Length: 615
Image (cartoon, rainbow, N blue to C red; front, side, top):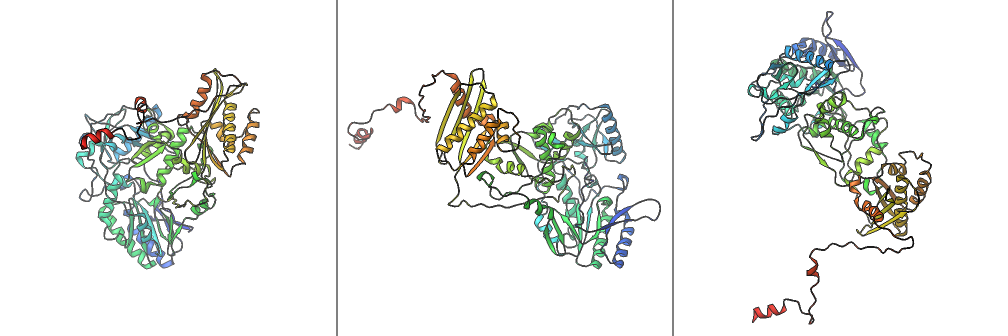
């Protein structure tokens, strides 16, 4: 179970104070705002002490909700077969920590032993900062077999609008909210997981199930339907009490606390803040003034340069961007993609949780995360974070589709925060950019290049594509010794010189050499003395275009110029030989049909047949 212990809605630019609700040595602390008047502050403190039982300080203080209100069900598709996951190997010290965590949950009444299981899942262990582990279960197969619950979440715009323009707020979060809802008895064994010692199943709703959030929202609506959009707002396990005056606030809180006490729903005191005048909610600042955009997001937009090329322009773009921290930049390419995906889903949680999301990328991070046989460290964390989302991988088939993502990756905010593995619902940034094609819009050419240096020789190829779709291929053989990177530069220079002769004003250049592309874009330093002159030449040639962009693409998408370079190496020609350009045409019918002679009299071939039918 991955607890959302660190997610917290905080007041915005407001001082808070910690008070102890117990008079003895035992500490039961909560946070309150400092802007309250002395009378209202005293009333709030008395109210919190009176209803101290609505808070849970440990699992033992947390009874489950009444099953008459809500239970979690796990319906399965008609053709779904039970799947037994193989027990994953773990280090002995990790096994002991997992055993300790299982015992803790068993003693709290969350688990019971299961016998003769037909389907079992594996444990995913996530290390904590204190050396302990957070135990989660890989419910990937169960989520795939279970249909999606269509119970709606609140519209974010409506929730933010209803919260704003109030004088006082209290932000609350339920204690281990999912575990306060019981599983229906007939579905408990579907949550079975295997350990080295026994097989267990959950008696309460565990974290990681696809429809857990919908079940929790259904419970909150059942409990607070008459108070929602009036005294409080509810979004899954987050609750906001609001009031127009300080006097009304304690009244509203008391009404809410009575409801919590009646149905035994417990709050997490570490994540509650009472009596503040503003707060960050789902990416916005809400206060008595109204709704304001988070200043941190405004600063990020101001520092982001506008798109300059056609590839960087899109219609109606929602995007997020961050810069990898120093330790994250050392990850492999696939791990970087996994890290970016895990960071993105926690910022877009309220959108992705109840919809199927298509992940369009060159690599499949989902397969890498969920099919790795032995999980540890950050891989385990990513799997836990992604387990409750319905993400479908779609292979990227075009370069255009990643233009915005590539632009954002290049222009990421340097001061952006590192990846946090807690679920946050408040850091969403949405930007709408509409670009109409005007009469002065430059229509860029496209140029693909490739070079090769191997046992057959040194060959280069380039293809120019005009804005109206005409192809201009060029290929050459190099009769001097060169490295493969030199051959790539030769192909690039040949293509740029051909584009200049064609009088192209704007051009998008594509190549499969990451080194060459990154060097000409200025991302990598050119240290090889053999490549420095090439870099200078490409820079001079680039100045002759009004717009130019350099883009990297996989080798399998650069086949036409690769074929040209290969063609050059396959036959021998003299130095002064004149090889004419070849035409590439597409024929729709067979050759013997194309060989039919025209009629001498100019009439169609079916003229005589038509005359026979008529007469």
